[in-house]
Image (tube, rainbow over all chains, first blue to last red; front, side, top):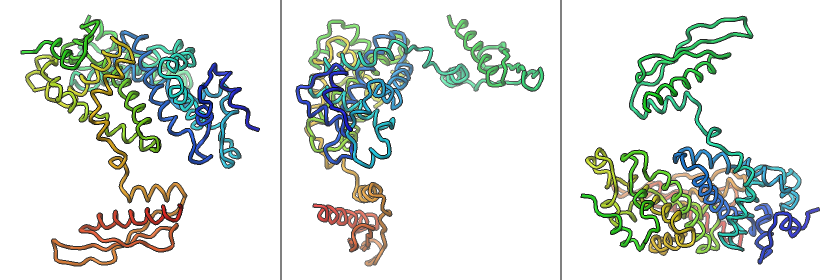
Length: 227
Length: 227
């Protein structure tokens, strides 16, 4: 039994001038030609813009690449499906019988598309200013939780890219010692780069972790050299 | 000799509350840390949104995929570089000496990035409503010229996707005859699909062209069957 769209609109804090737009936003293509695909296209565009602008303001020191990664971490199928689930959007989806039987209302792709379509419908119904406010409100918690640390690349990748950007040889990692019993080993590695004359040493419970730690030390050393 | 940014702003019909933002939009990363990369990120997002919304309104019958292709045909490095050239933006770019010597002000990537950065600066300086107006004005001719025909996929691709969407076997193309002298050959091909019982025949000056023509005939036949 499909619940009433007006109920969902109320829960979402929305009142549509044209309620048909909201119904269309909830209608999957399995219902035929009048579906939410065009609204999803519109919603995807406005969502991308609103989040990009917010991140630009929130992280004045973040570079372009970092901002793009931050956005991708916030706006993606699984985060949109999560938001859709928080608001029980699946209960209100209008699906064809095939999708209904196979549990389409639980699927990430369908939930995420509907979420974007709601944003598109809102843009069309009430314009960019209100739509922007609503998106920021819906994303509020996720926006508060996001930070640049999460989106930094791991130290080995950062170090490699730094070397490439200066057209230097790639960092070299060597295993120096490997000690301890089978399941409690400690790995010591050495990281050498063309740039810094002194290598960096670090240890870890796996070779990979030791290499990351050594790369991090090297990055810090290079930063100090430059400052 | 670099020309004055105010001159360019006037030519573009812009008056910045914060002229430093406009200068930053024209500043390539070869000049150091205070460059246009962040503004370009912002401009890319607002441009994508504005054009998506416009196309949504302009083509009420176009599907989501078609709208995406239309947008990609309008918003891309070469179209942005073209707009930048029309407005002589290259003359006003602020480039490091290396880029200056190597003619960076002529490069598509640098011109296109600056164009987006100007949009980002405008958004930040004057908000979405004015920014949107200006982008639509700058893109006016391109938006008038765009049409869904340009962005349709070729007939063979369309036919293939149609079969896939109905979970049928892919179309089969067979060369029936190949006649004429070496440089004036005519190719006759037959296109068979699972769906239509009768195959379609078409000819062309190359095998590829004949196949496209046969696919087009088949598409028209299927459309008639469905209507």
